[in-house]
Image (cartoon, rainbow, N blue to C red; front, side, top):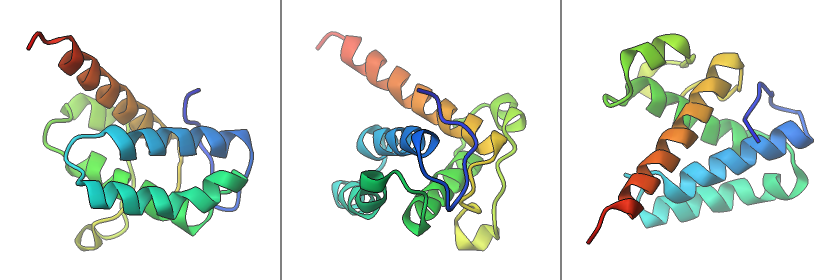
Length: 125
């Protein structure tokens, strides 16, 4: 199920899809240390249980927004296709809202992570 535009205060299936995508990124994206994975998952769990989009979801979305904008390995064309909003660059976070561009960016990150894991698992030892 793809991530769609959804906003803080919402609940339901769109939020559940967002949580599924965020959890996938938390658990599988390279460059996140074990302790951070654990902390982010613990932060998200109460809202996952109720399919609600509160401050924890907003915070985690903001982290991935900032990452998307600042990662050097994401093609420029992809970044131009999904102009993700940031708050202030020095804060290191996005605005935490899943608008259309953010939904596209998160879906791209999930696909990129999934593709990287497939590539890694298909390499012979």
